[in-house]
Length: 278
Length: 340
Image (cartoon, rainbow over all chains, first blue to last red; front, top):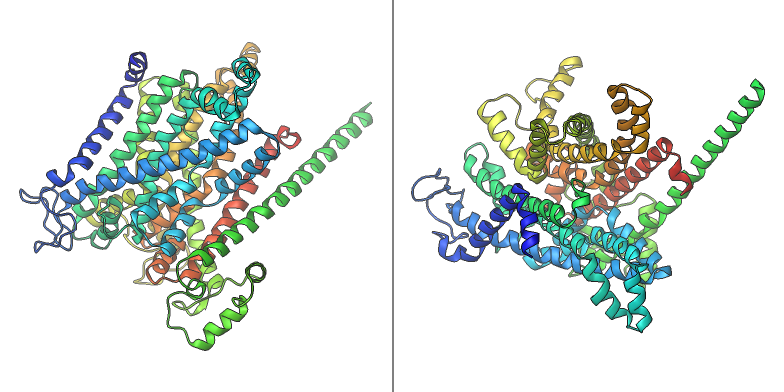
């Protein structure tokens, strides 16, 4: 662990990314105490530019933007973490089954993976949310079940290369059941790439949620950054601050997770340096 | 001797063309189940959505009972599910995507009308982000770990993390609204109808900001990709051979390395096509660009489900075709792929 941190630290940008994400995490956890106002409560001061009462100004309904940005961190992190977790879980299951068993199971699962890879994800997510309602749980679920193919391919490739290794042959020769071989012996060895792609997926999920909310499909009961930009769109001429701050928040959190992904890649996978995107 | 080698060349050439044709045919056949799959996904959504499937097929409108009865008949909603699926697939194959109440027009018509504006935006974004991405990537790779390299790395990191619609909003607030350098809305000036060169210049003027915003994240991805690809290729044996032959560094870089480094970029463009389209939709909303994005936004607002479903199918079709096209281009550039 210490050695890992030493290697990770060498990428200074990645350390910055980690701090950025930590700041947002603190904001998300402490938002009920940090936020000066209720994020969704309508006030009488609409379109107030940033001043000493409203540090980031107010929007058309007099809602405090600072409180919105603080509470929005919850939505973004929740969506990012949970949907990346869901998609990684599905990807690991599909990829390891495919790589371990091979044969027709592999063929079938890989066709399915290709299908999900080609399908325009954002538009399918949009339709599902439009039809089934835009609660935050729906959004998390949809992003999760549509984002797994990259992980599945990655895990499959790892498993294919591990399958022929001596230690796997050895455990199999002892007569260990498949489940044990997969979970105890092969999966831990496929860990690094899964973790790296997981952190990049968090960034993508956050961007996707912001995009959906920007189209008016955000959860109406939760203040999210994408929704704030959706509201701001009509008033860009009058109130620059309504768009500026929520967008900055999205930018920094996405960059944070991307940087962490890069840093993990450099630390865990030195040979692959610079080839992490895609 | 001459004739003999010419014959040999011809035979090889025909074999090459034939292998290309079989490859294209094979790829086309592979696309069929994908397209069918997408139609089936759509069908499932219509039936899984809460409430009567008729709402998804008509949209949330006060349609006349006769019209609703007609739609029920058309899609065979009173029959068993497999028959319904068949009805649905057949009607899609006939190009019937339903009728949009808010536009009082067939869904296909509504959508096709908007395609050119979106395609224009995307093409400009793809071209500039690819060209600049190659230039930046090569410069970065040639001077690895230099200041220039760090600058481009930082730039691509920023570009990759910016939400495209927010970038659009910020450009709009600063460059259009504050400094009035560019028009803020739409595709052309409405005050006076322009013709000829003035029309195109006006269009170009409207295009600059949305195309820049849309392309920036691809510029970032391409820069990173070309940089990594160049660095990898530069250490290949054939590059060493080229150097050993005494070729100039310029020649080695541009003639030998770059061509090979760019090959995967073709595939990347195809894979990213769907994301680019999603970005285009979001950008269009910011700049009121009259393309698919605007249509999507309005249809979400008016709950015009037939338009949304139709758009999904057509967009999927577009993405599949784009992938097919890039695969074919790739196989023309690199014949090894056809054998594998």
